[in-house]
Length: 218
Ligand code: CA
Image (cartoon, rainbow, N blue to C red; front, side, top):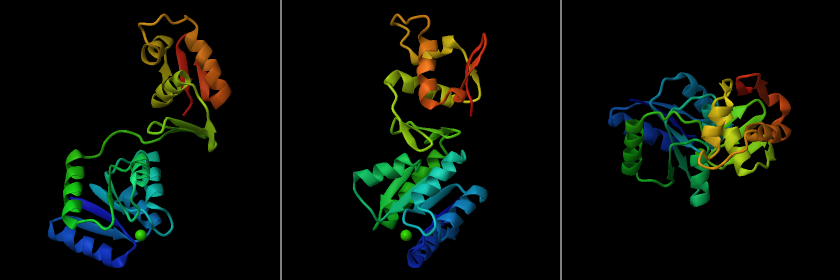
């Protein structure tokens, strides 16, 4: 198993490298956010141990960038911070697990092994299309970095279309997945809600494919 350690504290990085090598891992170490990101993109690793406070690019931003590039390398975040908020932050950015410094090496090893057993999950942390971004963990939508306020139904419709970005999705399929089939739904509900969404996320983002349905432009 090949593990990438991204840590700028030299002594900790060396200790992790030696410890993991003794356990039979192949270990590479990067000492900055950009160097870690570059190796993670091209290195063929099975997991990454990633510090948060790094020169150049924070650990959170490294994970966000990888996930935005559809890279699902399992990531264990190491942070000197603690508290629930920071932990949620770490996991929301797309990391798979989180450990607070100072940590026990035995616990780190156990978490790393659990991560390797689970393998890379196929779930995007944040969905994006052009300047539009939807974060399922926070149920938050932004357009050009400005928050877009959506009703629950608008959000559900947008999430469904973003998960199928580039594909034509029929009205029937949208009714099935976004509306509760047991409730009477007006026949034109999809058109009406597509209209609401267009006003909020941009007309050009949601194409009507005549006679077939709708397509979210990726
Ligand atoms: Ca650090």
